[in-house]
Amino acid sequence: LSYSRSRVTFSDGLNGTYAEILDGSVPGRCLFLFDVRRFAYKARPLAEAARKAGVTVIFMTDEFCPWASEVSDIPLVLPGAHGPLWDGAAALTAVMDLLISNVVVEIGHSASERVDRLTQLQDQFGDFE
Image 1: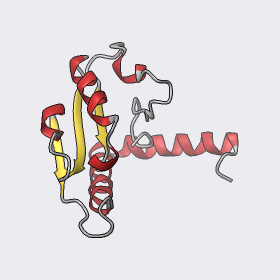
Image 2 (image 1 turned 90 degrees about the horizontal axis):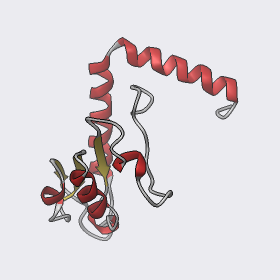
Image 3 (image 1 turned 180 degrees about the horizontal axis):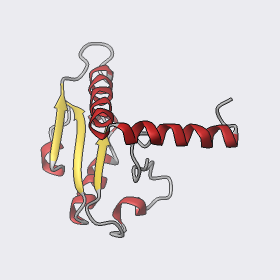
C-alpha cells in the first residue's frame, strides 16, 4: 500500500512503543491491523491503545477472533482455515490483495507516478538488483 500512496507506514512494534501510531502527532490517523487470533497477542492491546488515542482502527482477522468488533471501528472478519492448517491465512491474504488493488484503482494516475518515483529510488540505492 505504501507504494501506491504517501503517508502509509508499516509498524512492527520493535521499538516497543508503537509511537508512529500512538504519539498523536498526525490527526485523522488510521490503523489497519491484519492478524489472526492465534497469533494476535499484541493486536488487542494495540487496537485498544489506538482507539483510546483517537486512531480509527480497521481490523482484518479470521472468524476465530471473537473480540474483533470490541477493539475496532471497522472489523473485517473472514472465514478462517479449518482442519490441520487451522492458522492458514489464504482467504485473508486474498481479500487484502483485493483491497489494495481497489485503493490503487481509486487513487488513479498518482499511484503510477508514485510507483515510478519509488522505482527510481530503488535503482538509485541498488537494493532490488
